[in-house]
Amino acid sequence: MKRYIFIFVSLILILSSCSSQENLIGVWINKELYDNWKSGIKDELVVPMEITVGNTIFIGFSHSITIDSGRFQVPGGVWKIDSVSIHNNATVISLISKSSNLDRGKVEVNFITNDIVYFSLVEATRGFKEEVDQSFLLFGEDNLYNRADRK
Image (cartoon, rainbow, N blue to C red; front, top):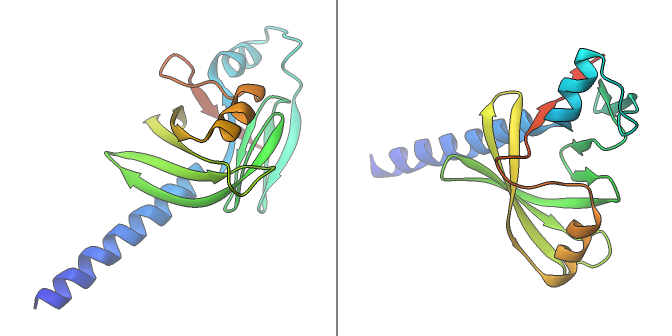
């Protein structure tokens, strides 16, 4: 009986990890830029463009964040996704540097709603932190990201 309970709990944890990763897949846009664009306010940082993730086309901007099953792309580079896990109701993505397998970091994704998130840098090596500093990825609850519209 204990074995069946263990298998059941393990299956639930695996499925929740997979579903949270699936929920993250797509294009994420800085919420303030997204809201301005939707209301018709012109901004030179907002250059609408089609971004394909899997079989889905999103309308993103030049400063969008793209997450698919194997990469986390930010303006300025692409990081490889090593793993995705759930910790304290947040999704933690373990990333590998674009330039060195030794440089790694963990980014926590906190969902406000299904379509609004914010990112937090949980831990990072010095080399990975330098890459983050050169990207346009903003962290914290004051820097919300909106899921991009599907075309």
